[in-house]
Amino acid sequence: MSKSIRLLGYAFAAVGVIMLLCGGGAFYYDNQFEQRALHAQGVVTDLTRKRDSDNNGDLFTAIVQFTDAKGQQHEMADRTSSNPPRFSRGDKVDVMYDVESPSSAVINDIWGRYLIVIIFGLLGSIFTILGSIFIIIMRKGDSKIRWLQRFGTPIDADFLHVYLDESVKINGAYPFRVVAQGADPTTGALRRYESGRIWIDPTSRLQGKKLRVLVDPKKPKRHMIDLSTVIAPPD
Image (cartoon, rainbow, N blue to C red; front, side, top):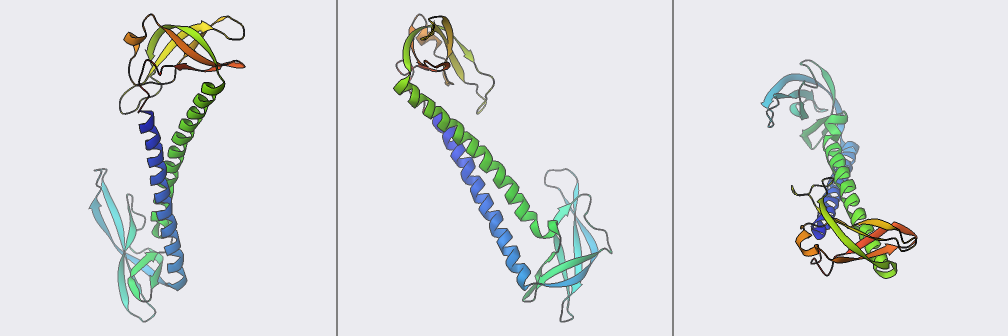
């Protein structure tokens, strides 16, 4: 499961980066378009209605007419559909168009020009951040385990019980944690030790057994219960 979580983190980050690149590409294309585009005053002549795919009502798209520098009249549809509509019939808007392809005209405002950039940029940022958080958490956990395996003080602890960790839910399942009790390597006082998350219930395999715990002697709260001889390593 830990491998699956790690892969999920990398997948989220990869999708996020791809979306950010797409948003950056759209922004670059818009800048190139702006450099060669001409401006014209357009008039909203109609509002087309279409059903929202999520059944949240109708969406309206502005139909705009404008005249290019050669005196030819063109009609275009706004890239953005919304409810309520962004414009009313008769509204005047600034239109940007390519001389070679007037049909590719856009309304010169944030939503008309940068809707795709905003969508990809926002979703890409969310996916990248979530993926990075997954990766950082997993790497931090791996680093802690490697340190304790090398420098931790081993002690024997008595198995107490296993509980369901309902603070985390992945694919509809909650992980388990093993709880043991053993001496503090510094003070000798009894201390409660808790394992990391595991994805099977090992209660029947641990009943009446001593568990090996690796403890940071300077920070006893920093520890790991070694379950490698009882439970197969996570996939």
